[in-house]
Image 1 (spheres, rainbow, N blue to C red):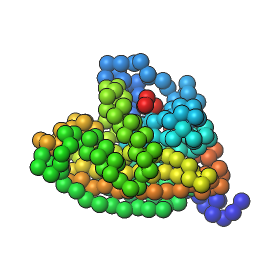
Image 2: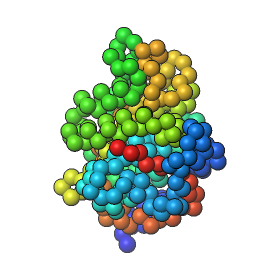
Image 3: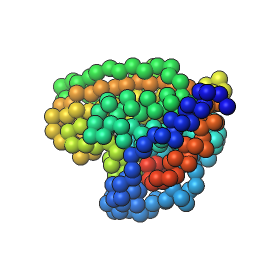
Image 4: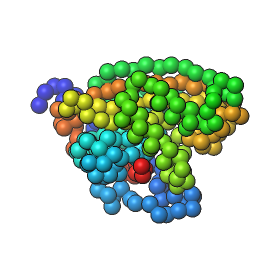
Length: 273
């Protein structure tokens, strides 16, 4: 085993994950609050986080913490598992490290830092700023604003844009799913979430995602659907492109799964598309 892999294994072992808070990050509790138990499936019943994306051969989507993740049909079952495990691990590490700043750019910086320690290689990482209100945006709500950003963003291929937009439109139309997502993305006058697509390029697993952080002039209950015609917001966007070092991911997989399972909870929920 190389010194690099040994070092990364030690990182995974020593990482502190944010705990699951009963009644907060519980899928069953979120769905009960939304008035539905229809899709309250425990992780233990699924057995594999990758299953939340559906079966290979079909496009899929899931909410993992504060990230809406879409996967293209060509991803294998193992690809889907690696994506789900990596993003849940990075989300839990970031939540612990960022603390009260979990709805700001600090959270996402910690999120990326963790990803880069578990087998993902940075191809692009670029922050930008925007300001939205009724005069500067033609979008009615925040998810329309994000959809417009994705549709016009050269970061994504046309196929990737299509699946991200389908996932976003589906998530915001399902009250129970949106309630689950809101637990990770809303923090009063500050909120944030990411949209992410997983694909395979030249045989290598890749992730492309856009992170949006909103700093508003009033408290917001749901950062997926709030009306930006009536609230002013400073927005930061981070475009990130990462590629998998599959050898590293293969070496860390069992250790990451063991780490997540020690504090197994509900950081992931499937989204129908």
